[in-house]
Length: 178
Image (tube, rainbow, N blue to C red; front, top):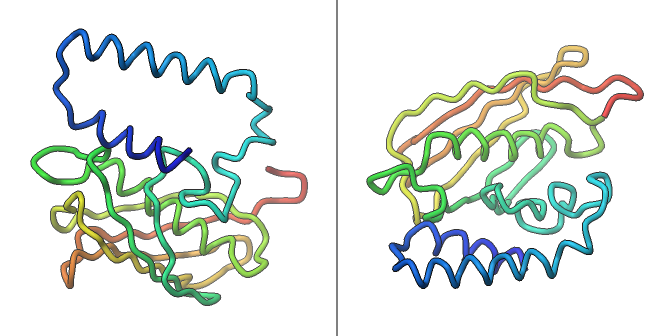
């Protein structure tokens, strides 16, 4: 279902519809929403954002990063920003890139049995155009820990060109925090 939603999201982002087609599509989307609505659950029980085995953790907004290799302190994967993430002129929207970095850096920060942490800051530098519909490599490193602080760095590559890089600080949650 999520794969189909992502295809719909990318397709809807790239169309110029006549009014009657737009009305019919809206009715179909409303019908599908009505079909799903009886199955709404509390946010602590929903799959979206909480299902690590499903691409994007089953969250339709997140760019899907596929992990190719990982260990305790490093992760390498790939991502393709579809048309949904278009900022203009073939480039991924600047807001989609920090979203992707936060997701994948958080994944490494909380990996290998480390206690849960949350993002304290995420600093992103845009170095070159990040194209859509191109397979891009992302590399993340867990650099060090100081008490409850975890420092990570990441870079996004189009071939050998760094399109963006990031530094982040994640803070380990205190007992009882969520």
